[in-house]
Amino acid sequence: MEKDQNQDNKEETLEKDQKAENLETNNKEQNQEQDQEQEKTPDEKILELEDKLARSFAEMENQRRRFEKEKEDAFEYGGFSFAREALNLIDNLERSKQILLNDESLKDTEALKKTLEHFDIINKDLISIFSKNKIKPIECLNRKLDPNFHQAMIEIEDNQKEPGTIVQEIQKGFTIKDRLLRPALVGVAKKSEKKVEKNEENKENSGDK
Image (cartoon, rainbow, N blue to C red; front, side, top):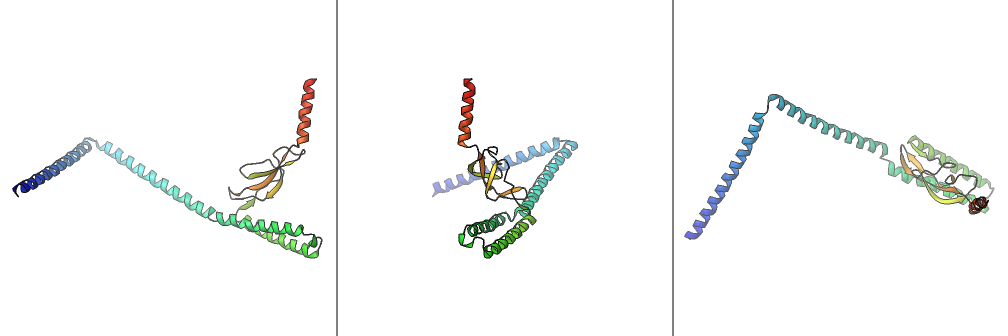
């Protein structure tokens, strides 16, 4: 029992010594900080406070700008996903129109004519609604391929156009304000194989001379 009690007393003594040592260390650090503060002149203290204040204001301004940008993006492009899905309406109208045009039983009928007129009215209304919301179709035909707005799907032999010129629009592309909503799917011109072979042959003949 005496041994256990002695052991407990030793542990208590060690714990007290450790606490006293920690307290002394903390007091030393606080005294050092106070000494350093006392060593600074009033002007230095003012400059330090001004620096801290400037940093705080800068951080607050950065947070305000981030908040404003996030708010603007939410307002400007909040309907981005909805607008992209709404493009399916235009696609489906175009597909339905092509199906009717390719139906021989409806060719040159009054029913086809009236149906296509209704399709055109609906399509114009949709484009008008999109336009009011800053959603615009991407210009394609006879333009040079722009990878940011056009996606080439096929190459079409055309010796009248510069290679890379868009000669066919497969699916309309759209922008919303300054952002790409959907790229236009297009076909671009390329030189015909016969033309290329002929040019190479002419070069060889010129070299022989």
